[in-house]
Image 1 (cartoon, helix red, strand yellow):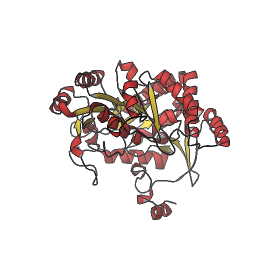
Image 2 (cartoon, rainbow, N blue to C red):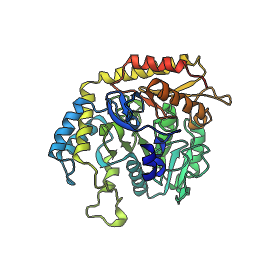
Image 3 (cartoon, rainbow, N blue to C red):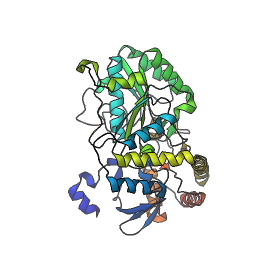
Image 4 (cartoon, rainbow, N blue to C red):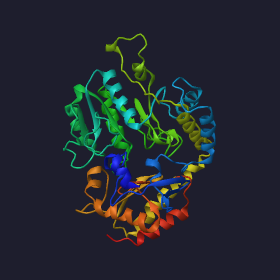
Length: 415
């Protein structure tokens, strides 16, 4: 099957990270916590649809409403009631979401967020984090992978309009931001680095960046595409007493269907209103043909509705995440560093005298080949799926016995 895919698709995949050696298996079906490949092998899944499936694969409580909607239709291309219902749910749970606009991917959401920041401030420069991942938008495809000073891709121009700052290092971050203060439109940051190593930001770091940004009349953008509705019903920023201007959402708020969300303070989001405005007065933030389609809106709303009515899910999966981090450390006799928060976790095999991981540079200097072998061992021998090299996500479909099996399988691994 993969040989056929290679003939038709670049490297046989439609997302770069889905390829792994010697070749990725092809999934035939999924349900609950499991993936089943075309050879009928079953895997306990911790990749969980790029971490978007907090209720598991195809949860019945969501599926029945999506099927009902699809029987009506899955594409209108107009305003629909399903969008209003989802937006009401988001705005009640995310105070900064005074106005909302939908797209169909996280990449689009962050692309539009930085466009808004430039439009509102009249400035050009955007700051991001070393190792921060905000999708493939050219505006933010910089300093994603170590070494951060090398360009991530050909074909990208105006890279000088994006600067990068070190995560969890407030003094050096402020030093860089001050150099560009006059033309700084805003900063975009994940409160937990996802692709950069599953690393939480310290509260002092985020508050320090926010204080500088607001004093500088720039915009503070929080990318909560991974973290939104992951640890609690709502966003992480609220628990950290932060005051973002724009928040981007995705993954969980779509219930596993295509979605991206830009939301923020009314006076900022209104810049995207093109009614009666000259080109010089507006920020052209569209959406796309499939934005706010009723199937995605229904999936998102029913997912959030279930999470709201059963908030004990968060207590369960956050506790399982803590169990996983502690027990994996023990399984490797303390020779690994396990990062994460709540129901997210990632194992790192340190080298070069690395004892803690608080930023993506430290994560990048760990033994990535050992991590790949560890994850592939779990796939090939134990029926446990992690996308090799990436963090794991626990869903409501998992239980402690699943985690115990993973820990026992980890004890058998030696680089």
